[in-house]
Length: 223
Image (cartoon, rainbow, N blue to C red; front, side, top):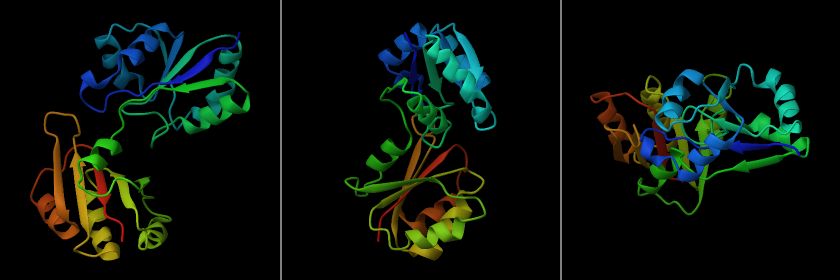
């Protein structure tokens, strides 16, 4: 019998956000693929999960595909986890899922933590229709993508790193206008969680004089 690939969401901060089912499956599978084994080790140790763990990240995922498929065909059950949140959402996972499905093997994704959902829901912006943009291109294609989004009517959601968030807010003001309503969340589920709401101009002013630490989720109202 073939094995199954499980995609297991892990907490984005607070360890209590992992599900009971996720813990059970991580204890039952034969091996775990982790984006960074050093990051995942404390989480697994905390929940008493002692399994073979291998690195699976953007630098080796292409090379590892054939071997993972072989393991699955031999009956090995495998769990894929990222450093935080749901695999394949701005993290490795898509290529593996596509290859597993191409080989007519089973894939199961558990529901669980992902940063953009709480950021959107507590933003106060429309959540009935939205577009998840993830990380914008750093250089090539960045301006083109922003121009394409100028007329977007749905709420837009972006991920951003702390050292680039002010530049990104400046670009949003340039393309979307100073008075466009928005919300910026950082350190979600962690001790210093913060959400700042207002116009793009107001939010930029806030972060010019306040902490720029943690991962950021930016929600911008559509046109």
